[in-house]
Length: 195
Image (cartoon, rainbow, N blue to C red; front, side, top):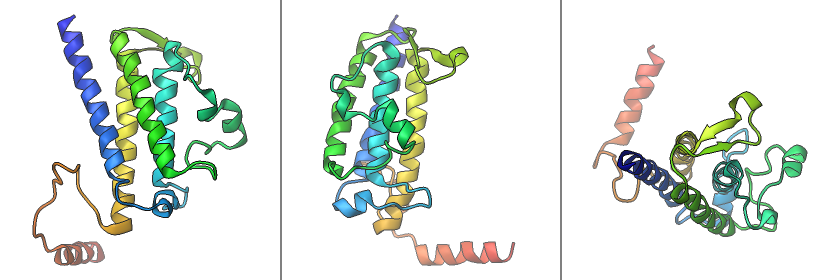
């Protein structure tokens, strides 16, 4: 049991670190920068936050028989049917800040599932094929961490393209200080051109 508790703590800490890093990447940006599509598929910062809120509700809520208390706040299956990207942008009635607030409330909800279930607790993912739908809490925690970490990586690149803010997190930028980025880029361009 102690080993399971230790593993749950490790996984929960990684999940929260990724959540915090995502929020940090939106700090200091105005509403337009948080909403503006930055890729050919419409990736935008507020949309990533909204997507992850809905992901966590589904995986830590519905999967373990805990529906979100206010279904009107989530993207319904009917909305997904009408618009498969419905959880990837803030609507006219939402602000980026309201989406961020929503996600922070989802953390509390998701953490209640994590705190009240063992790692081997069984759940069923409603939208997965039947043969894969039976899962454990541990599987879901790893699945959500991987999904969130992937999206934080996308957000890293988007944020750098907006205002050149880079770094792992506010406590550790993990970037060389005083580096000559222009010279470095010129070197990489030369290597690419000569390949």
